[in-house]
Length: 144
Image 1 (tube, rainbow, N blue to C red):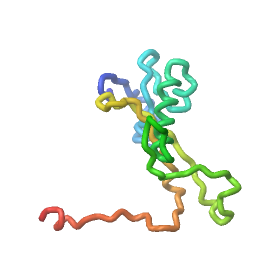
Image 2: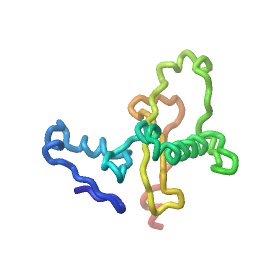
Image 3: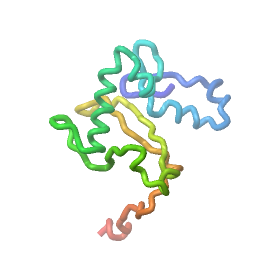
Image 4: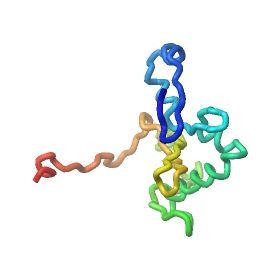
């Protein structure tokens, strides 16, 4: 039995054994929200179509887009991480570098706004020509 903050769900051992890699079942669960009425795990594509959940999760996704883009006045401040362009504005030599996005939702009851949506992009398909490194400090520096 896997435990959430206040909810729990059972992982069927037989179903888990059917996967070529049992960790795959955890990947399927990650990013899904448990519908407490039905017990179903719902991803964003299900949440946005559900009459009870669509307002909450539509707003949560709107906040994430606003945060990544130029913001939503009075709601969330933007970070200018991305900007929207038309397909014809993508440089021809970069068309092959376009990738997919996945919307991941979760409930974080300890947060002020518990309904969270995040966008992840196809990491295995990203081809960024600039520096992708993250500057780090040496362990010795940190201990000083």
